[in-house]
Length: 127
Image (cartoon, rainbow, N blue to C red; front, side):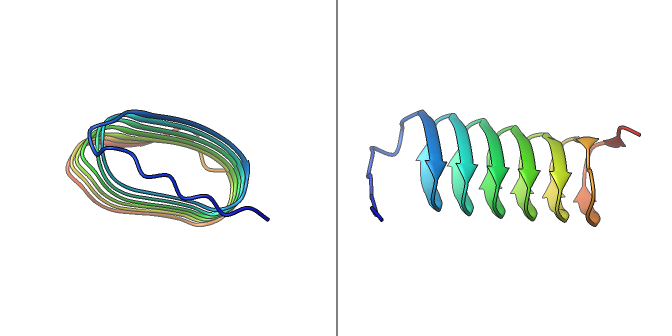
């Protein structure tokens, strides 16, 4: 097992492709594009757009100042305090979304619970 810590200047966009293992991203000023195979994922305090494609594992995203797009295969998904819009495609696992300044669009929610609270914009769910 390899543990890797990478520190980058705060104002930097990230484009990450990861096969497996846990990832923590925090305090970034720039857009993030993340393609993750498996493992837990935590993203906190980002000033920029965030795009996540994840195969499996829990995802926790908190405090994004920008739009958020998540395509998740399986695992729990928790999204909190987003100042942009949120778009989610999810295969299975619970989804919790709380405090979004703009719209929330659930493209697919698969199996698992869905909880959405405190959205200032529209909430749409594709049937």
